[in-house]
Image (cartoon, rainbow, N blue to C red; front, side, top):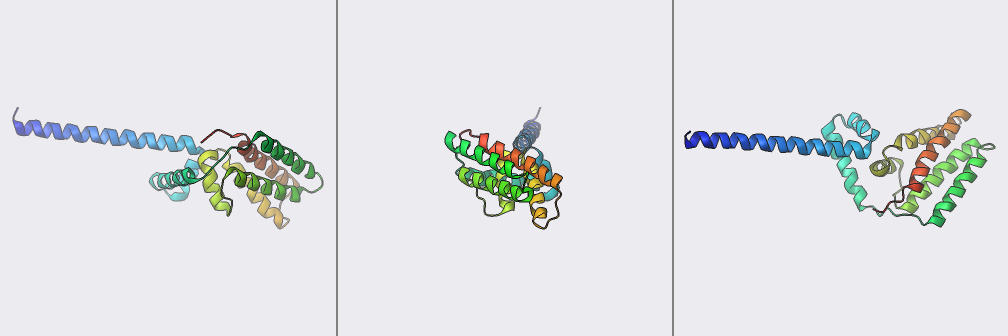
Length: 180
């Protein structure tokens, strides 16, 4: 075998190995994002028009999330929030629309105390998606009903559903107290 042939074989082998490594790395990164973001991964792929753009967006969310000071709540504060949630639910019987607004406010206060920015709804979704992507659809559904209820366009059953959706995110935010 000539030296030229040997060099060509080595270069081709190196290119194949590098391509395989790149493919495995991209696959592992995609799997990480799918696992971390859950249903939010597919939603973002649809919204961004493809996997590459979606993955860029999701990685940016992860980087932003790393900059946040997400903190645990002391047991006493968690109890206070749980009691406040019980009060909000009790108000539902007499004032369903107000209760949905109270639930939204309570979730926002909990997010704020945990260290999530709460300035605007879309930003909240992006920040929550990193750790709470599996319950984000609950938050979206609840928020949609809350917005419609402000104009009196939500039925009592929809308001009840909104409370269930808010509770899903609320409980996750309240009980997800692992250190970061």
